[in-house]
Image 1 (cartoon, helix red, strand yellow):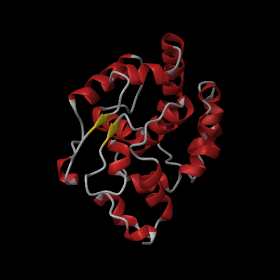
Image 2: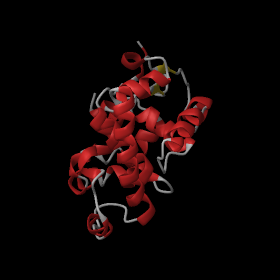
Image 3: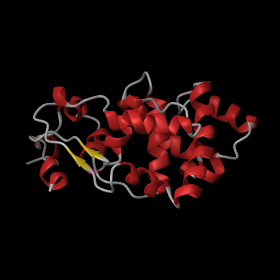
Amino acid sequence: MSANTFPRCKWAETHLDKPFYVDYHDQEWGVPVHDDRHFFEMLILEGAQAGLSWLTILARRDTYRAAYDNFDVHKIAKYDEAKQQTLLADPGIIRNRAKVAASILNARAFIEIQKEFGSFDAYIWGFIGGKPIINHWKAMSEVPVSTELSDALSKDLKKRGMKFVGTTIIYSFMQATGLVMDHTTDCHCYPALSA
């Protein structure tokens, strides 16, 4: 059976000709994360996605890593106006002034969360009781775009000064980092991640 014939969540089957997209679904989406750098990367990428497709962002992921010092939160928190201008001139990322400014603001808020909780990992997993939420959807049409939990987390992150962290963005972030497991029951990833 080739990689392209495994049953997958329907959204992943829309771009089987893009290996990076399929790999993201197969190896990353819904897998629990405990690394603060990775959490920050996904927070910035999910925010960058607002109004765009995930394919658009994922195709630029390597360029984002290069432009954003591999998502080193301490370096990003110190970005000045000159660095913002450099980012806004980079065709490899989404050149949106509000999103670029938010990434720096979010880095500073992220560091404050780390100071308060010891790590962003402790903060975020504490929000859901330390265990992933395992869903058992039969079809993608059943998967919500937000929940009461994403509402609450979004509200808390905004209160802490973050931008581009609306409830829909945060629900996508929760799916991306395995806080929520939303692979459909017919997907080849479902058995291992729902165990």
